[in-house]
Image (tube, rainbow, N blue to C red):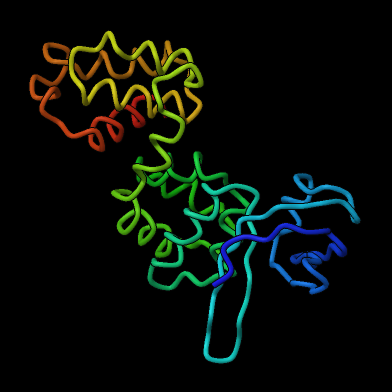
Length: 211
């Protein structure tokens, strides 16, 4: 199983690359929409790789970062979504935007992605929205490298609210808007049981208010 490749970029095509590693050229599927993240031909390149084995093929799919690879793996687990459709989805939406749409059941956004119709969009939400923890919490270390807004989440008394706030900030929402959305869900402000809600439900409600 090939998990990553580091070598010289020797060829770029519309939907694939050739990377030379130790005298061997590996063809890696990689959409043209992400070519702006590649070095020039002849320069060194590192890609995270997912190996997909079928009865009649052995294919490599490349990703600039680990988050895209993880999302690709989850997409492949959805009924009716194959490698090409999964790559098209990622070509149309970054993992953070895709995870936000899945958690919010945003069928309209998902239907705009290449190869995704209404039924596929509904299946994506149904099967993946509860598996977005990695993407919603990505970068939430609470340390010096965390966004200032995420570190400021400590003033929420409830752990679930702190986690939801950090997730919203890491999805790209301004801290002020993320805080306001969650404040509207706190006990005494529209939902007396909000403090007992899991992080996923807090996020779902907050994203709807931010839409």
